[in-house]
Amino acid sequence: QVQLVESGGGLVQAGGSLRLSCAASGRIFSINTMGWYRQAPGKQRELVATITSGGSANYADFVKGRFTISRDNAKNPMYLQMNSLKPEDTAVYFCNADIKSSNGNSYRYWGQGTQVTVSS
View 1 (cartoon, rainbow, N blue to C red):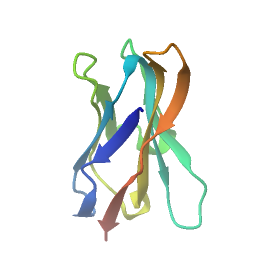
View 2 (cartoon, one colour):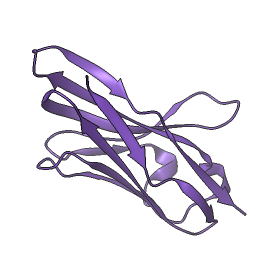
View 3 (spheres, helix red, strand yellow):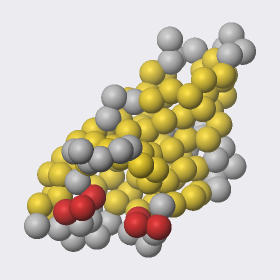
View 4 (tube, one colour):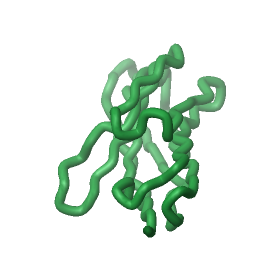
């Protein structure tokens, strides 16, 4: 059983910072692309950023210059450093990962989400 667990969400004032973490556990053979998505109330889930196993990052336009995605391949956590937060960044943030299990099967897993609330 593979699981992704996010942490680091919370309440912060506009202009502040938060760092989200996502850790994978279970019978993992390899982890390929990982990503962060978010979903605000009444809106569809949207891509925030992705990062490949080689470290290549891709960002949504609305977070470029403010958010940084990173990962530690040796220990598997993935991070999202969020700076200059805005009230419109308020959402539940989800991590996902393309994981190959030890049985050879590949699947895209999702975490349960962590709430980020930015007050004005």
